[in-house]
Amino acid sequence: MKITSIDAIQVMTAESVVAGVPWYPIIARVNTDEGISGIGEVGLAYGNAHQAGFGMLQDFAPLVVGMDPFDTEKIWEKLMNKTFWGQGGGTVVFGGISALDTALWDIKGKALGVPVYQLLGGKTNTRLRTYASQIQFDWGKQSNPLSEPTEYAEAALKAQKEGYDCIKVDPVGFNLEKQWVTTHEDWKLTGVLTQDKVRLAYQRVEAIRNACGPDMDIIIELHSFTDTNTAIQLGRKLADLNCFYFEEATTPLNTKLFSEIAREVKIPNAGGERIYSRWGYRPFLEERSLHIIQPDLGTCGGIGEGKKICDMARIYDIGVQIHVCGSPVATAAALHLETVIPNFVIHEHHAVALLDATINICKYDYQPVNGYFKVPEKPGIGQELTDETLEQARIVTIKE
Figure (cartoon, rainbow, N blue to C red):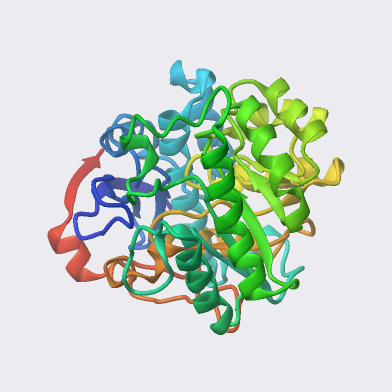
């Protein structure tokens, strides 16, 4: 089998959960001379890097066309070591590598007639506990910015009624005017938090705890909006609410900062969506500054590299929650790895996955039932783009 062409696909029909924030899933479709194609996602749908991810696929594709898609290790090493910038890593470079690697695993599964999880070692986890992610956007088919603590409680109750026993919330993501903090300069979250902000964040989480009861696990999401000082300040305040873990408390560019937060905050430390490859994770694992890692298969290096990262984490008794914030392609890929690894903790079901615009990107709608997912059983990763998505997408094809 030989790779004959690669399509870089920018999905144009998606919809963001945050007004004004770009949302364009980028998909790699790898085509072969046997008529089998595989897909993988660049994990840069949100934020301000999707054009770079789209371009990265076009830069890397000529190096892969003509190769055997079963040679995933050889192709990964080529992209890492023979592209000059690969060894420097970073979001965009590893985004391109990730999408291509996942697409190759999809081809392997289809060619062999088996789901990818069977190629990774089979099922360790048959039911995948799932949490409702980003409650500050509300929960359901409509996305709404929330401000008042009562609104946070109501959103969490919606998820609880659907069977979720775990939710994730960013209690500092929106100010009182329901403006996303990255676009509102007055909402300062670094240095030292003023008491009104500490009080509001606490009240939002407290409202969820009081509404949903003691058995609802609550993940605190900070999106790295806070720094070490303010994360510790906030974490100490939230400690009595029995939170599940404390996510992205500051930038991952300095591992020592996470070590300090882990010492000072009595909530398990989590992070990883902006950490890439085994090399990027190594210091966090060795220092055990993260208790839960959250690699994104669209940026960490793909399914193959994700498996290696999770296996490394197992040595240090570190749990895994794959970061999922993309199209249904990202969801399917994550489920295949999560069903295999023994250190799986929980699956992230993002608010964007509930939107019809997201669901309609792909042919198959995988949703949890009573707070649990099952892995797709179709060959490959078990997902395909719809004809409508492809008709409206921006596509660049790289051939031999």
